[in-house]
Amino acid sequence: MDLDVFVVAHSAEWQRLGELTRRGGKLTGAEADELVTLYQRTATHLSIVRSVAPDPALIGRLSGLVARGRSAISGSHTPAWREVALFFTRRFPAAVYLSRRWWIPAMLASIAVIVVIAVWVSGDPHVRASIATPDELNQLTKPGGDAESYYSTGPATSFAARVWTNNAWVAATCLFLGIALGLPVIGALWANALNAGLIIGAMSAAGRADVMIGLLLPHGLLELTAVFVAAGTGLKLGWTVIDPGRRSRTVALAEQGRSVVVIALGLACVLLMTGVIEAFVTPSGWPTWIRVGIGVVVEVLFLVYVFTLGRRAAREGEVGDLEARDIGDALPESA
Image (tube, rainbow, N blue to C red):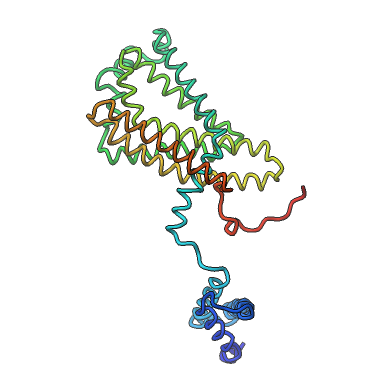
């Protein structure tokens, strides 16, 4: 192919495409049709040049034209700040709200297990003896022991980062491994409830339940809620594998999977906040009522956020999924 001849033959079309893209949305119907036609032709020209005569200057010129043409046809993108605002005011709270029938039962069941284990451990010395030796229990529960010193190990910023990473990993495990019929999620909930119940029970038996409450509640209320949301969402994903409803299993899993990603991103921010509280508020020398009060306030704010913004967005049709234009086309399915 003679590149000079090719350029002369099509330069008028390229120039016209450039003129139309510079005019933005101020096009008549005929000009809009012309824009689409010239964009398609120029994209073909670019492909030919790349495969037959890859001249860098011409490829750069045509690539810019094609990019501007595509932008003019598809419209301007939503500003990043608006996407962030939509995520936190609609998508994330709506996704959490719509999963409430899964994470609220998971929360209530876990709390019940924690209470039963704590009461059992605190009231039965034989159970405590089977868990650890007297020296180990004393090291855990004594003033300044392991239960208390854990929250002041290392610089607060490093501790906050470590806590956030650990909690985010636990939440991600519950969210994404839920696809294995929810079994890993049930295991994670059990392990979490067992550990919490054992520690609370041991501290209660030592007469230091009030200290444990002062250490757990400032960050634990919101932290455990985030874990329960993750677990409930993971269980919902696992149930989708079993019963996709009237949709095909592929479509149902794709929809629920995108919602899982939305919740994962939102919970990462929530858990970052709990990590900061656990690092700076929990081990502080403030009175217990202030530390617990901070935990109660952030928990209430999160629940109000979910059950006001989330419910409102859900009633308006938000499902915590991508915009329809970002999902892509799907093959038709038989009813």
